[in-house]
Length: 323
Image (cartoon, one colour):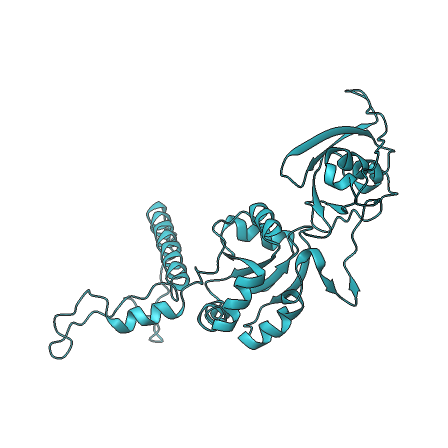
């Protein structure tokens, strides 16, 4: 290199060039894909951390020799600690089917939404759902569902009931779908859960008393049991009538009754129609109508069908008092 008279090297000539081109871009994309794959694998390993335990592989000679690739008793016992309570769970993930079954069984619905990445979820399996007293309480008064937040059913539940923290333990009314109790984002000790569920253990959904007052229920007007009431229902509007709505009712025997009413008709007309279809209701047995839409109450027979928003719905007829 040339130097000036002061002993300083001449400046380097200016050059222009490309630092990276297509080959570098392709390399960067491959690296990004590898990173995504690694993160996905890490997430899957985390999700399975407390549901499937692999026994360690012994590579050194000595006490553990010959056990490579086999599941030992310790790993099996550890896996069993965090197993879900399969003996308590409803067979199915459909909430509507669970509500129908719970209504028949006169039980509440107990829902547990789990997150594989939350250790509190696994502690519920290990400590709470395995507790003998909790098991007996759940079997006697609840139909239990357990879902993960990543499943379709779990995602729907989180959206419908606005659950923001996991794990979640909730009690639902099978008749209305209303959330009666909820604990979110924490592990619930067995005794704490039993204390919280005590009001539900003392009463079925049909006779529940909570919050200082008995559950409101619409009762049809009754006569003495020895007489059969003569029921008069308003005339059914013709098909295609602009002000008509169709209401479907699942009667107490499981059959369905379908009829058109005017939007301005009162909810009491639907009650009268149900009585006309069920002889036992005409002899004095009281009943109520329940919507499958969570939170929609049908406890005011003076409301119009338009106000009650029952047009196009499938309602459920249920005895107020069970024989």
